Structure formats: C-alpha cells, structure tokens
Amino acid sequence: MKSIVVVDIDAAPKKVATLYADPTNNAKWMDDVARCEPISGMPGVQGSVYRLVPKPKRGSMVFTATLVQRLPNELHLTLDASNVTVSVQGSLTSLPNGRTRFTSREVFSFKGVWNKAYGVLAKPAIHNVHRKQIKAFKKFVERLERGR
Image (tube, one colour):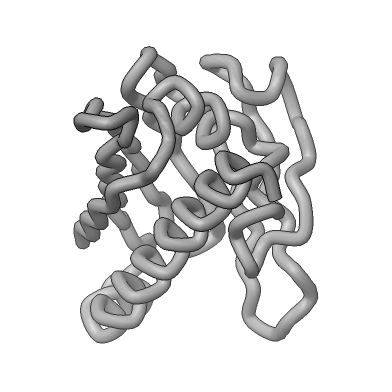
C-alpha cells in the first residue's frame, strides 16, 4: 500500500532537509512518538539505526528506523515493526520565495495474511495519519522559521 502527501513549507530546502533528517526532532512534531533511541551510527547520518518509542497508549508499535540514503534533497529510510515494514522517502523541491515543496512517500509492506488484510481495510486511516504527520512537520518547521 502506498501513501503520498505533498505540502509547501515556508522555509528553504536546506533548513527543511536538516530538520527532517535529524531523528531527535521526531518527538517534537510526531504526536505519537515519545523519543528516539539511537541504536547505531550518528543520528541523521546514512546507515544510522534508531528506535522510535511511542507515547504510552494501547496498541502502539515500536519502529526500528534505518536511514538508507541521505542526499541534499532526498531522504530514504525504512521503518520496521513486528507486523509491517514502511519504506519512507522524503523529497524536496525548491519553490520561489525561499519555499520548499516536500513530498513524502510511504510504502507499507504488511507481514502475514491478517496484517495484509488489515492494511487493505485501514488504508484510508493510514493515509490520514500520514497526512496529519506531514502537516505537523510543516507547522514545526514554519514555527522555527518564525522564531517561536
């Protein structure tokens, strides 16, 4: 299953890329993440591995993230949990007036027959969560740009 969300952010691509690539920022804009725990490598550097620890609530999944590739305008990582693997690709395009178009692509690969069936049924809800997270990232970046 694939989900794509596109937003325009009032900040330069370099700033957006830096904030998005640093996993220590995740808890600042992802409302379901309590913290990021480094496992190996330097956070934000290609090849680094870290754990996204959810805030306490029933049914939360712990994801292990691996930063697969980091280019100036593109970031690719994988998120692995017990029942799903998510390939995440964020790409940035420069817009006029110092703005950035941020495109987030997530491809979900559910593990096992029941999880695959759940993925089909939950597709709208998963896309809504993805959209909500990317909009939260946009707010986070723009708030920092305004100096708040």
